[in-house]
Image (cartoon, rainbow, N blue to C red; front, side):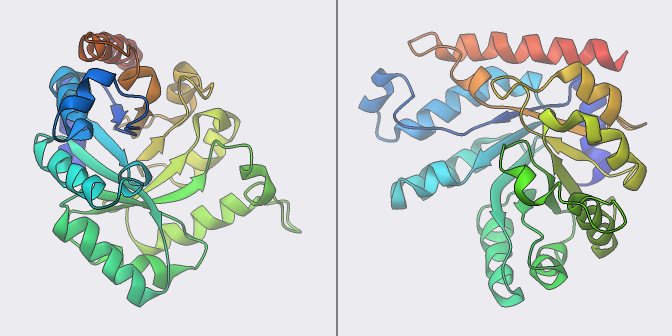
Length: 268
């Protein structure tokens, strides 16, 4: 998917919401366990309910890998079910030596047909370049994450007073372009968004951490939006687990619509 296609969907739907399908079989409504593929049945109903209120779905691969072969099958069916005009993110956080990354890229982009993958830049350019060889695919580099442990390394300053995450973003942006590289920036780190936008004014940012993790949508938009919006804000648990009974899809729809409406107001 091209950058212009993402921007078009944001403008058409008046939202920059990404629904995280972090589907935990222990948290889905119990009546779904009677289905042949409970995880896919859950995802299918969530997608049916929310697709008009989001421009992206993000699938955290750990939740599918944990189920073995059945999980991979659920993953494949889910990706294939998502409408083609909706941006599909594999939240995999890959990043290894070039030959290994080449195989990861082949799995995610060829076999599963995702539009994007999250990657760790720790091993440098040769661990990322195989993903960038695919046209109309995206690499989403971990920039500044929302978890507590981010402080352990990402906020370390060098002798010039520059944070490690700043050096990571400045260096990695040269590996590709604003047409194939995005960055993960946690919603709980909004105080750094202006600094990040000074480095990468035109790249899209994937923002997790709004909702349960405490991130504020208004601050994210105020400090992170650019002329194209430039934001994909993820919400997972608040939407997909809005209810745990027969009404779960309808309640997910209501929550997604609520968040989407708030985004539309910010975009006015």
